[in-house]
Length: 160
Figure 1 (tube, rainbow, N blue to C red):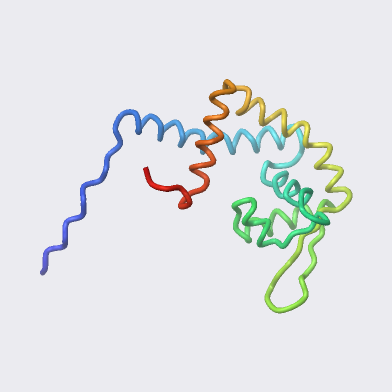
Figure 2: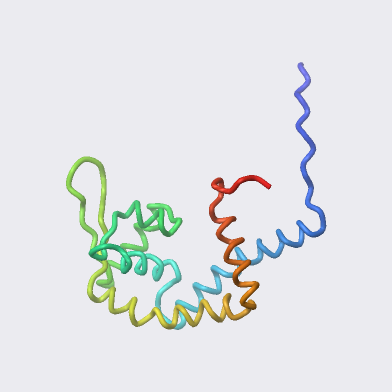
């Protein structure tokens, strides 16, 4: 049996890196749960449902293809479809098949959906302020926004 080539030793985290990662992991775990809980309690919508409606409210003619909404909300088409079914049942969106080849579907924000987005937006902003923005100084907020954008960009960032 031939010996397998040895893989390089892992680059273990130093104390500062470990603390930064633990804090980031906790943010990634807690913030979505807090956003969902507060949005549901105060608005009757999950954060994801609100995000979907907001994406449509900012789209031309309040309409977008489901695949574009999935990309804009970092969602799978399957998850998006389940949520869209619920929102459609509430009369907040309408889905229509796009003519032509392939399985393409548009979602359109209804008048009721737009009225809900307008009604819920101030509360959404309050929640965002409470959970994130008001916990940071202006300098921290600028840095945080820049760093979050860099991390979110993924492969588009040059290596250190």
